[in-house]
Each structure stands twice: as C-alpha cells, then as structure tokens.
Image (tube, rainbow, N blue to C red):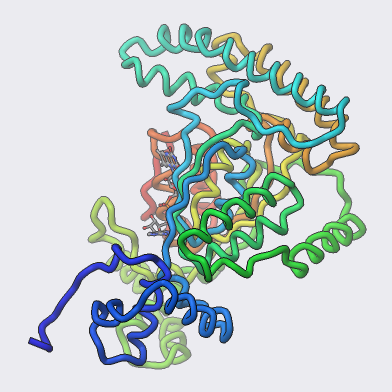
Length: 449
Ligand SMILES: Cc1cc2nc3c(=O)[nH]c(=O)nc-3n(C[C@H](O)[C@H](O)[C@H](O)COP(=O)(O)OP(=O)(O)OC[C@H]3O[C@@H](n4cnc5c(N)ncnc54)[C@H](O)[C@@H]3O)c2cc1C
C-alpha cells in the first residue's frame, strides 16, 4: 500500500500551513497529510519565522497562495499592481462596463488645484456619458446586423480612451506570499500616496491569513532612493525634449536568430556540449536549417505554442502607444517591460469611428482640457497630475520578448476580437519582425486584415 501512487490537494489548509507541509517534505519521510496533521498555525508561524524570515529560504512562501479582492482603486494603480508579473489578475473591463463621474480617485492637492482637478475630470466624464448614446446611434446605423451586445461593445471600445486613469475599478489578484511580499514593498515605496495606501491595506488583509510571511514589509530604501537619484541623473544626461517616432520600432534583435533556435533544438535532442552543436550548425546549409525549423513547427495545432527552444532568441521593441492599449499589452507577463511615466507630451489618439460619427470635436476638447489642467497641476504636483489624463494619451514602453512569446502575443493581439489600437501594435510588431526575420515570421499566425 505504501508505494501506491497518491495524488490529492491540500487546499483546505491555511496557506501558511500548506507552505510548511510542503517545505517539511524535504526532510521528512512522512506523507503530506501526516505532516499536515501534526501542524497548526502557531507551529507554522514559528517555522516561517525561523526558515523563511530568519534564513531567507523564501521559496517556501511560494506555497502560500492568496486571492485578494481589490476594489475601487484607480486604473493608474492597477497598472502598478500588475507590474508584478508573477501573479494572475482579472480587472473590470472598459469594454463591457460603463464608468461615470461618481467614482474616481482624488489625490490630495491644494484647495485651488483640487477644484481644477475635479472640474476637469467631471467635465470629461460628463462628456463620456453624453457621447455614449450618440456613438450608439452611429454604430447601429453602421453595423445593422450587429446584436445589442456587439453594438454596446463597439461603443465602449470607441469611447474607453476618454476615461481618465483616475477612474476607480476592481481587480482580482492571485499571488503567492513570496511575490506578494515584494509587491507590497514596491507599493509602499511608490512615490504616489494611493499606491502606498494600497500597499498598507493589502498587507493588512494578507496578515489575516498569512500572519508571518508578509509581516516584515516596509518602505525599501534601495528602491526608493535609487529611483529618485536615477531620475535626477537622467535629467542631467538626456535631453528631455520628446521625439516622435513611429509607433513600433524594432530596436534590437538577434541577427542569428535561426541559428540560436536550431542550436537549442539540436542541443536538446543530443548529448553534446553547446559549443559542439553550435559549430555543427554553422556548417549547415540555409536549406537544412529552414527544413529543421519547419519540422519543429509544422505539426502545431490551433492552441499549441512552439517548442520552448524558441525562447532562445529575443527582440526588443520601443512602442509608443495610447494608455488604453498599454493596459492590455502590459498584461503579457512573459515579456520584460520598462514603461515611462504617463504625460501628455506625445499627444493622443482619436478612434476612426469617433471621427466618422462626427464626435471628434467633443473628444478633442476633452483632451485639450485635460492637457491644460495637467500643465497647471504638474507644476506643483508632477506625479499626481498623471491621474488627470485620459487613456487616449500616448506613452512609451520598451518590450523585450522571446520569439515564443511573440508567436503568442501577435496571434492573440492581432485577432479581430481585439481592440483596434492594440491590434495595430501587434500587426506593426509583426511587420517589423518580418522585415528582419521573414522566414521565422512566416510561421506566426497573424491577422493583418
Ligand atoms: C479578447 C480579450 C479580452 C480580455 N478581457 C479582459 C478583461 O476583461 N479583464 C482582464 O483583466 N483581462 C482581460 N484580458 C487579458 C487576459 O486576461 C490576459 O491577461 C492577457 O491577454 C495576457 O495574456 P496571457 O495570460 O496569455 O499572458 P502572457 O503573460 O503573455 O503569458 C503567455 C503564456 O504563458 C503562460 N502563463 C503566463 N503566466 C502564467 C501564469 N501565472 N499561470 C499559468 N500560465 C501562465 C500562459 O500559457 C500564457 O498564455 C483580455 C484579453 C483578450 C485577448
């Protein structure tokens, strides 16, 4: 009986007890349920204090998983939260839900600027509410065979970028205690008060079920002071006048991408050292290499990702994108992303259908009002002024992705079901990639329509 395979879950235990149960299997010959039987929350706490906190055996904390409901935080805050990539999120959709002026974040400015801030956002959100039926009328005429729900989605897709990033939203986050600890530290170290408060409140909620693992979180001097110093240094080193570029620029890539993939594929199925494989690949003909890549991809089904060896080559894109699409792109956690602060310097995008519907004057008026108020508020509160800006304004993000993730991203985000602005980014990324790697790009499922 002892050798019979057993597979079961331990989800009924408190998360910190689960973590200790798994940790103890490293030294104990007992079964998991037997180990768990002998534990309680107090014993688990002591174990974590000694091993995780005391000796820094942090990976144990990954077995304590929390699902945290976060309500009424700004859209700006959800992006700071979702920057923690080793976690899972679902956020209120701007396509399926309507927002209004009753719920937006109000940073503490001075009396005069508070007034300007609120008047500006009220005006923009009133206009957003006013344009919804007008946009619906236009969409109904344009897409006569569309269902009610399809029409509603199109209306919200067109107007979502009028929403300032201060509007409040809800976010579900599932994360393990090790990553949560880091997320809380980053929030507590953030320059904006809302993020610091969210950090404190997440900690308070998490302490109720993982009393030990997030207990020692606080402002991090290294992260906080280094960011401040680098911001100063950057101002000295770089010209701060922004330069417009095309929306998607492939700024770095491996010229020998195909070789890198083939090296890895042959390495995996051989027992030779990498250098030997590489030398052999160098002597292969172009045709032989292409045949091998083709063989490694051609049997993929509709939902199959390429083999993992396609992760051995990378591309870096500099992307100038409206905040609405940035929200979507940022969710791709496998990519390494570095994004810049939100400002109005790169201007804003207007959806084609807003122009076709003749609503562009109202739309542009809102953007101009936001930009003017931003200019005034940012003189005294440069960070807080970000909250004013509607998602139509553009920002820069640097994305480094391996080719396997690009297969996934371009297919998913160029699809017709997606929003026009991130579809365009995914399509442009594909075109940039095809310029330098036409053979490899040929295997990516992309919708260029
Ligand atoms: C049409 C559409 C509608 C959407 N609507 C919403 C919405 O209403 N609300 C919302 O919050 N989001 C929404 N999203 C975003 C979506 O939920 C994903 O967060 C986003 O598309 C990122 O894709 P991905 O999960 O494949 O992640 P990536 O980070 O690109 O990961 C690539 C792949 O790695 C694997 N992977 C990565 N991380 C994990 C993990 N932690 N666990 C398991 N596997 C992992 C998966 O196989 C994944 O496909 C929508 C996306 C689309 C395309």
